[in-house]
Image (cartoon, rainbow over all chains, first blue to last red; front, side, top):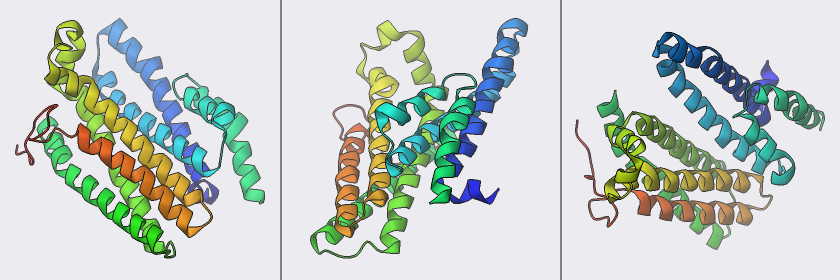
Amino acid sequence: MQKYFNTKIGRLRIVALFEGISLLILIGIAVPLKYAFHDASLVKTMGPIHGLLFLFFVLNTISVGVEYKWKFSETTWKVLLACIIPFGTFYIDYTILSKIQNRTNKQ
Amino acid sequence: MYPYLIFFHSVFRWLVLLSLFYAITRGIRGWLTHQSFSRSDNAIRHITATIAHIQLAVGYILYFQSPLVAYFRSHYHEAVKQFDFLFFGLIHISMMTVAIILITIGSSAAKRKTTDIAKFKTMTVFFLLALLIIFMAIPWPFSPLANRPYLRSF
């Protein structure tokens, strides 16, 4: 667990996980509840939570991208795009972030 | 919740401005007098960025709760012609977002730089730009764009 909290990329991966989960809850459960069953309560609670996680993820991505010298045209835009696509953050975590973390751990 | 948040957002601006101003003065001093980028300089860089992020997050929560913004979004075509609605519905949030992104980039880029002078220089330039944008986008009582008091009460 330690390796996730000690580095910026590790913390970004944690935020990515929660951002992805909150997006899935929001569009997979809360929004159908609102429109099919006219119960907006879950949207009202999940909306701000997802919003904050989203904001935190975007700011962290920019910050990590600058710090780890990612090229915007190669990496940063993909990570930023992933956070608005369902399962996107899980995908870039698997394909991009985990590899970068493993690489920096070995150095 | 809304009145407390708007009070907090109003008071917290002073902390944002003070921390930015302090970081910039330390940045300029370190840059011009060739000091070493100390641990406390680094802490100030980080804390300043964090304060700005908190303010942005509170601002976003307010944006989606504000009755003014709700009117702006539901009656866009009429509201966009009234400058007060346009300011809080669009201008304030976009300028502040740009400013916070500048702070984020500046903070990370400064951390990344290898020489102390480059660290001070990067931090100063980005933070100064952000401060300028933030200063323009705050609804000061003297602002030509929109006016709110220096300190809000409940």
